Length: 213
Image 1 (tube, helix red, strand yellow):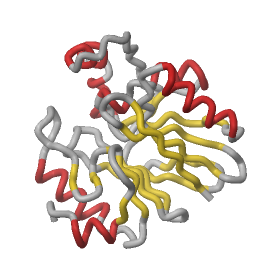
Image 2 (cartoon, helix red, strand yellow):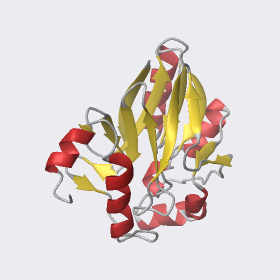
Image 3 (tube, one colour):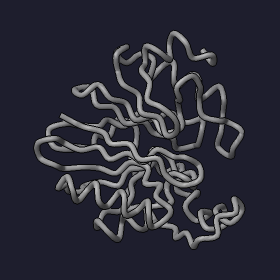
Image 4 (spheres, rainbow, N blue to C red):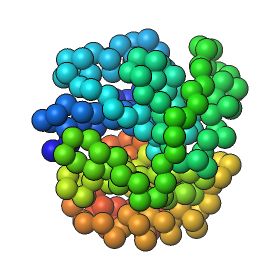
């Protein structure tokens, strides 16, 4: 059985997730956005207090606020980030992008350790997270779905009452909305949805109340 812990980090109020198996204590950090020492210490303390073993460092996409903590986590836990290859080019731009947003701290870019593609499965304890490719917010946006646990991690693809912005490089409104309809809204209605910003929601709620649909 998977549990999900949400941390809200960095000036963009990004949701960093720790997804872990309650029995084996195997875990993944998804979208490690911790930027400051206080945030890193908060994440590290939770992992230590719960005796978690970090097996994966996953990215739904590689916009700067979702990869701020990748270099730190890679060094701390000995795991390299995994993401879709279409977003890899965003890594080299991380330090300059941070400066553009007025973030004075030194932000280190962390190269990927491998790629995740549509249909790939990440095993955490007795559960599997299946990768669903839903581009349109970024060129390489991924969602991670566990059918057995009824959870869907969507990054910035879908929000409670909204969708990811599509005016950034790699954005495509039609591609994004069609992908949500065809790949996410076909999942069980009671699936719990974990976005990259803001509160959790459900497939049922977004089908029936999201103004973009």
